[in-house]
Length: 150
Ligand SMILES: [Zn+2]
Ligand SMILES: [Zn+2]
Image (cartoon, rainbow, N blue to C red; front, side):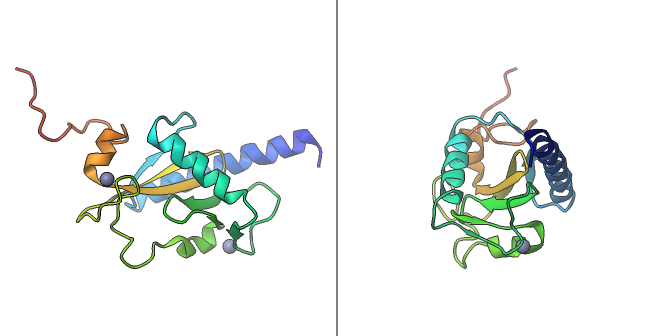
């Protein structure tokens, strides 16, 4: 494949990924961060996830090929990458589904989010406190406990 064709495919796959993000958001599965410029904790998680995906022990569903397309991965399932049809294989293990990916506490209310890295969608779940600490709280939300200045 020549570089131009590959670039075209990557662009199309990234566009597809963006559409999936909208679908995920519309389905109420959490905040979506379609950012290509993540910061802090999230950068570390993305690097860790990508490193796990490119390691020899990585597992992929049988639909994943060399051709660029929308792929799903999750911070809580390192080394697994699947196509949109196989996304259920990323479901957290029992007992892990309410565990914060940052502080590892089990919380009553976990906030699932997704970050897009080109065509790769990486899911993660944070407790409210870590959302704020990592700067990933939805815009417009006040930090708990902080009073508005009069
Ligand atoms: Zn698949
Ligand atoms: Zn947390």
